Length: 217
Image (cartoon, rainbow, N blue to C red):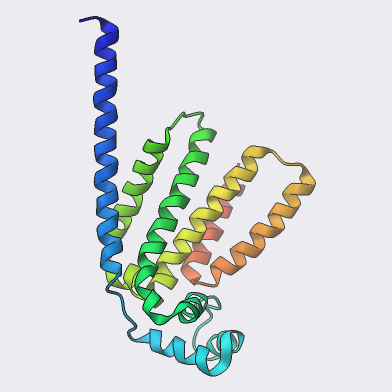
């Protein structure tokens, strides 16, 4: 058997292993998404729904901020689920998982470009799937962090928006825009960061720490 034939067989075998692992991770994430279909309103979900029904969206944000919590963006997702119908709440965990995998793929692609690594889409999806799976699997309280609406708004959703933000920052840096464009992007990122920080003070601290690390040369 020639060396080239051996290399092709090894390459094919590795490709099949990669595909099998990617499929396994996809199934595992699909199981988490399926579990989310059993999510229902509990506890604070009713409080947030009541605030929105009584005061409207902006009035509810003001009332919640002044009387309950400084998380000024926490009512955005409850408002949207109320607009589309409370029964759509069961789709929220699956949507958040899909969005996070997409964000991680984008982030890993930008990291690969920065490292001059030619990572294929299948590898990117596998790494993104593994990262999201183990974070969800090892969450101290999976139901509260992922499947409960209020908990996912505070813990899970900000992590997704931060991942998207990090990927977009790396994309802007890679394209080497002019100073004028960078200034505009900086203003946009500041506004986005302000809104992301409104979901949870912990996420605001995370973004601040990442920005501090990026500023150190």
